[in-house]
Image (cartoon, rainbow, N blue to C red; front, side, top):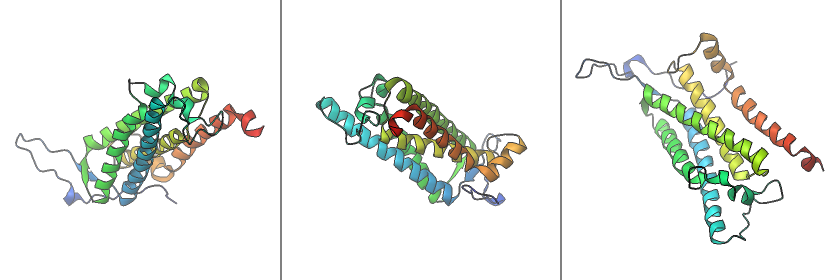
Length: 219
């Protein structure tokens, strides 16, 4: 039984292969499914919400050093500790401000798919590369949060989960549509078991969080 987000098969007549003025064929335009569009809108909106809340709290913290974010619940779940760290502003400005832009783009792409938009191969690969960059950055932040800052931010966790989901399903799309060349066996795996990849990814992160503060959770 095949599971995971399905994508629409593009009829041959909808693939634009008419020659350009210079005689070279244009990039093939590919449509995604409504399910993929909904996933991108949902995960993008979740990341956008997390980035917005963290940005507001960061500004409040800058105005009042005694401000306590609502998600600072205990010594471990302490958003304030994360916001005050050097890692919270890697590029010289609060990280969530970058998220406000990146997640908004993902929402726009999802809305476009819901409107039956088709995008060329370069666009899908660029989106895939962007989500990969997001996962790499989130992975670095996870390491910093668990083993350097020694605190968790719940809104950050929401953004991490949203980024992992969008990355794996966009990757699945580009693989199954033949936009990203891979061996046949790997393509078949994505056809049937896309859902397993984000489950293992997020499960691994949850396991690290559980074991990192095991004495705290069980004390």
